[in-house]
Length: 365
Image (cartoon, rainbow, N blue to C red; front, side):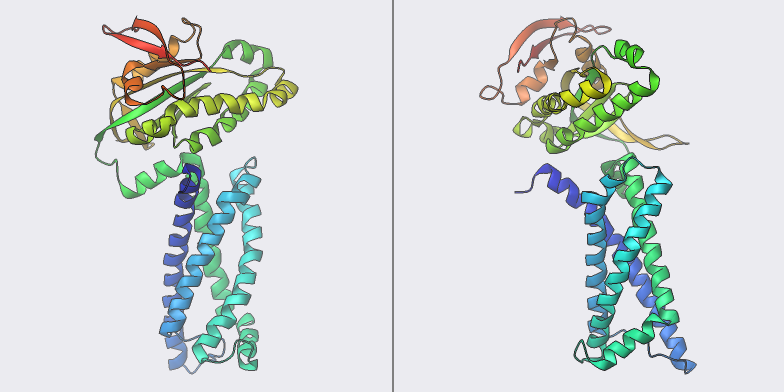
C-alpha cells in the first residue's frame, strides 16, 4: 500500500506526463503537416519519419515516459536541489540540465522510430544515415524548439505548483471549488512559543531565516500524515484535513507529534545557528466549513465557518493550561486514541467571544 508521501509524489508527477503527451501530439501533427508540404514540393525528406500507426504509438509512449521522467527528477531530486535560488535562476539551471538530458533522449528515440518506420534493424546503416541527416536538418531544429517549449511549460507548471500548492492548483484546474461547497474538515492551528521574544533577540532577518527552517522542518510530518497546509500567518501555520483523512489512523494527532519530533531532531542545528530551539503549541478541532474560490485581483481557495474561529481560540488557551496541545471533545469522539495516547481532560471551557462552553482535552507525550 502506498504511503501518503508516495501518493502525493505520484499526483505531482502525473501532470508532467499529461503535459508532454498533449504538446507531443501537437508537435507530431504539425510535423505531419510539414511532411505533406514537403511531399508536394518534392523537398528533401530524408530526415523526416512518416506517421505510421507504429510510429505514432511509440512516439506517444515515449513522450509520456519522458514527461514522467522529467516529473520524477523534478519532484524527487532537482526541485529540492535549487529550492533556495530565485525563480529565474532555478528555471535557467533546470533548463540547462534537462536540455542535455533530452538531447540524449532524442539520440536514443529517433533511431528506434526510424527502424519502426522502415521495419529494419535498429543499427542498420540506413537508420544511422537517417539519424545523421536528421541532426543537420530543419526537422531537428523544429524538434528542439518543440521539446524546449514542452520543457518550459512543464517547469513553469512545477514552479507555480510549488508556490501555490499542488492541491490548490489542481482544484483551480478542475474547478472543484468554483461554486462553494460544504464539507467537514479537521483543523490544526499551531503557534510558535515566545515568538515575539525570539524575534527581538534575533532581529528581523535572522528571525525570518528561523521561520523558513521551522516551517520546512514541518513539511515531512504534514505530508506523511496526509495534511494540507492551508495558511502561513506569521509564526502560525494552519493545517487541514478532509474529515476522513484527518481521523484515519489518528493522522491529525500523529501529525502534531511528528512535527514536535522534527524540531527535536534538529535541536542541535537550531542551537548552533540561532541559539534557540523553537517550540510550538497547537489546537485541534473538527467541523463544517464552506469551501470555495474567492477574490477578484488574486484568486484563493478559502474555508469559512465557525470551526476556524473555534480552533484558533482553542490554540490560544494552551498557555492558560500550560500544555502544548488542546483538542476539542468533538474531535476526541471522532478518533480512537485509547491504545496509543493518554487523554487528560482540562475541563469545560468558555471560549473568548463565544457563549457556548466546550470540553477540552490534552494529550501528553
